[in-house]
Image (tube, rainbow, N blue to C red; front, side, top):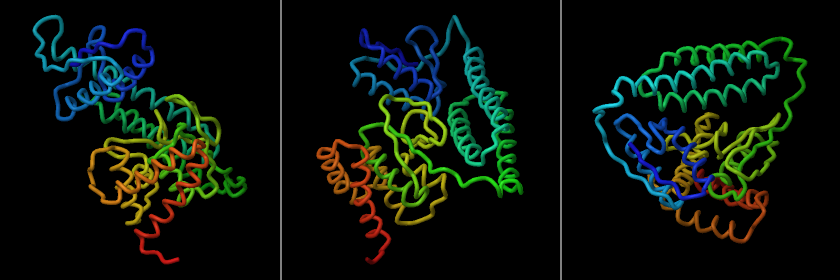
Length: 302
């Protein structure tokens, strides 16, 4: 159980806390009292949340509780199932609606978005909500539709897809600079980038989001956005994996891979961020840095 005390008059902190709680699967038992099942990792989720809350001027207490009166374990478990059932049914409804899409690219983007949503819900489905198979089945049907649609003879007359617009937050730094380089170099050579303020953004046609709230490509579990892109696009390259480890160590600050290059790369990119206010130019200049790093790690010769 997490008992939170928010700083007075801070709507931003309240919204931020609500989003974080949704992401880890917690719900409000009453007021600012939030609960999670006592399992491996859930206490750590609350601990990280408390650290963020303190950093924003709030406070929180974390404790383990055993229900005595007012509610039972079974009632709490059902509440978790009800919440996840609602999430699963929303995914199933969106997958069904996407069956009407006629563009292969739109289908691919929607499948990627729904697959991420499904994965996020499954991570916090602590008690096997009944609607899980419904959501997974609807997504499987949509993926089958995409395969048959892409193989359909009528697709030969479809115009070439427009260049993708990749959207991310302003103030790009390590993970977003590296991810933008990866996109343009190995995924979408015609990619253009758009920078938006605020924690969330609703994408327009031909837009895909990365490294931001609810994005199609963003942090998943322990993976930074760069690592997620490598996995999703099946980029099996030892030099790219090494860069992913460097980016992870800098961005996640957990020294998971203990890459010796991380300190130097972070120093150079910090200098770039200090000297260049333009996000577009940070990506352009940062891409040259990652070009050199990739050449060094892959053993490529000029």
